Image 1 (cartoon, rainbow, N blue to C red):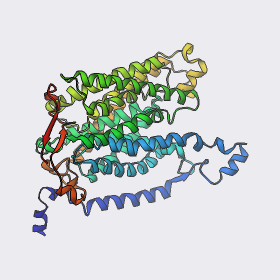
Image 2 (cartoon, one colour):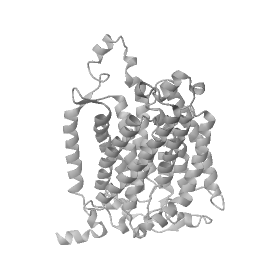
Image 3 (cartoon, rainbow, N blue to C red):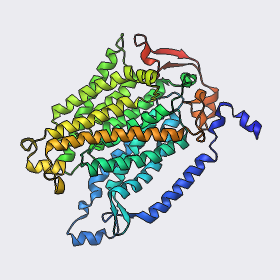
Image 4 (tube, one colour):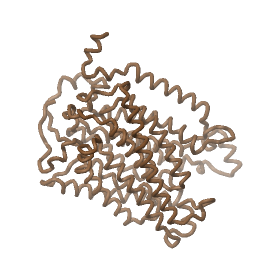
Length: 484
């Protein structure tokens, strides 16, 4: 047995034959039991719909499924294809990027249906949670927070650790979402606060706690190559095309959803142009850096999430996208290297620049737009409809609403940072099977690879993307030939 362990070499601490199956089987059985106890179909997905339809004089077209399902499909594609392929840029970690995204999203959506159900839709008379198509959308949103956090940890943690990140991430998300949306009565249809800001700072805090001073031993694997970057752009394009659905999926029917799609669409287009402009500007020879195009081109949609259904105006959406493309690209060139050098924060995907900061700014943008809302712009009924000014919130002034929106953003940051530190400390316990410093960013640690991969690797034209040293000399071409 001792010889067997020694033969594993640098992979000896990634042995998962017992730990990963145990976690997957036990947690999935727990989901089956909890679903059996708590989860039921809602009235629009239950077989009693026929009776309800007849009693309420409805038709099948009135069923929420026909209104929400197209948006659900778009969001679902973003979660599994968009986020997954966006993380395939590493030249030796594409299996891990898309494969572990698949794993944690599949577990996360189950846990999210329970956690969000307990906080938002638990029927106290029956003790049951009733789910429908909107529940599935919200569960995907909940998973997005953990997938964003995954970006900061990409290549440095084991799949068992990622399951732990997801378990706590979904739990923290459900609590902060309840505080922000229910207790503070904030509006955040596209999730700038509850999804992106929380997920970004959650992942950054975990990465800070798990800092690896010797990660440079895997520096040869931290770059991308021509084909891995091309796969990552596929993820970018899926996210870019479907993001109007993401920001509008749970907006109110009619003008709210219509406006959210328009505002997001416009902000996305604007951020692309400034991302290209800044990428070229930061290179002495004016060449473009694919990492900026993959990520900064999406920053406008992240920042538009909270204000998407507000009357921010089309030109206001262009302004948001314009500045987010600049801020995000600047972050990739200067801020990410600074964070690693000065704060010991290793952010593999640069989620600080795509999710954390744009999400935070999006929350504050929403606060400003809400605080300045007037009846002249929205109409009296429009204000009630957009900001849910009903019941005990009917007399809340718009200035007060803006203050609560800003407070919601602060709550999101606090939950992300404090929760991330706690989860990071849990993950530092040496039982999770994470790879050694010299074996990070390599699929070989956790995946069976095709034999030809081992035998036919040859010199490739590579340019070092997403690397800590990339911003150190932006005057030189980043192409070089490297032998694996």
